[in-house]
Image (cartoon, rainbow, N blue to C red; front, side, top):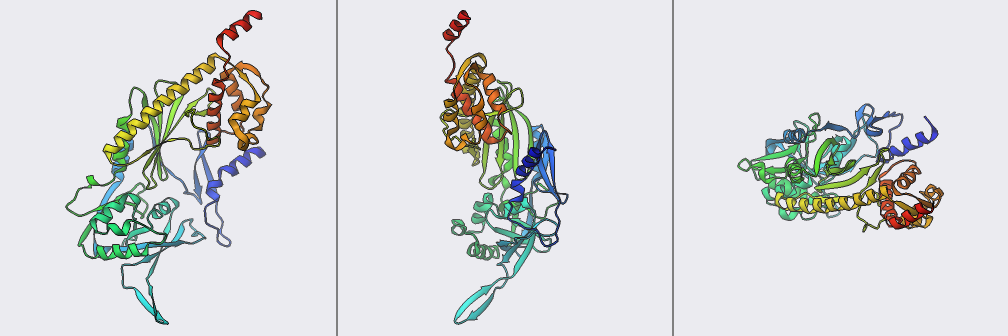
Amino acid sequence: MKAEDVVKEIEMMENLISIDSFLRTSQNVTITGIRRKGKIQSWEVNGEPFDEILSVKRNASGLLRFLQNAEKDVDMTSADLSVLVFVKAEPARAYTGEIITTWLDVTGDEEVVMKGGVGTMSYPTVQYKLRDMDYQYCLETRLAFYDEIGNVLYPIRNYAKRSVANLLLCNNAFKYLGHTPIGQAMVLAEKLAQINSIKLVYMEKDKKSLVRPIVGVIDNESKKDSLFSEADAIKTFLKRLNTLWYSLESYEIHGLDIRLTINVVEYDGVKIDVIIKDDGDGEIWLIPYVELEDGTRVRITDESTKKANATEYYWCIPISTESLMTKVIDTAMNRLSQSIIVFMEKMAALETSDVVFKHRTCRAVLKDELADTYAAVFRIPEGTRNGLELLEEISDKFLEHTPEQEYVLSRFVHALYGKRVKQEETDYAEEIQ
């Protein structure tokens, strides 16, 4: 392996090694990168998946079936559950690689210590070891139900706040959740003690895990239809896609997120990465791009997008109720379709036209903050040449293809389109020759 390849691999590990955790004394950790299709797809720490791809398939029905099967529910009595509030995570991980977290159990009788006329309440603590993926779920509200007998943790996700507040009649408690929401946990525990039973609805994407993030709670007489359903949200999205324009190529369930690859039927090489963000905010990201013959990706953008250093340019669809989501999806996809048409018309024009290339064009695209990063582009000789060939030449100057570089190439498409030589000028030049 060349020295520059080693540097690239280390840079790709940045997200992994920048996590807020440290090794214990004499603790050894083996980190393995799993490479597929020319890029690292997942990591293993001591042989255990760090950011595991849970499923990769090419069938939409398979995705929906997976999600529907992952949606589970369990009947619990109030006596079976404790209410926990997240306090902290230890800076050093367990020897097995999990994050060691500490929670307060506010369900039992607290101990009141009087000192100098001031009373201090003390609650028992619970330590729980969490995988990285489960830890992210727990940070959404920092509240959880806990089944001590089964050692099962049920983090309350953002999706579940409304149903929890409605069922337990504590809406005001959820209007603001602080860093350590002890007050809300106390209200939750008090309300929970007043009901006989509760049904917890959760997502079980990994059957081995005892951490089961809940998306809602209901009583025994209610139906799950009123709760947020990830499967229903994705089904609605896929139904709204115009099959004459879009087709599902593949999907993968990647850690917290679900990622789809959509083909744009009208144009060869045009695809859309669709990321369903499973982080409690409820968003669908649409990232369109066109692949050149050498595999280089060029992000499809509107010319009005002016941020020269944008790395995550995407259309965002908030996941909400089905009726509202349907309208938002239609609006976003119509706008996206128009952007693709305009962008691909420019790509076709570059393929059949010559452009006048000047270094000042590079400066206009890259701005001051990116000029040093892409200094190699300025070494391309000025002159007139085919637009698409020039775009590929610019791409060849990039050491690696990152989201930022995909975006930079898209800005060059808009800039070079405006520098095309008019056809009559080209014909006149040919006659002279």
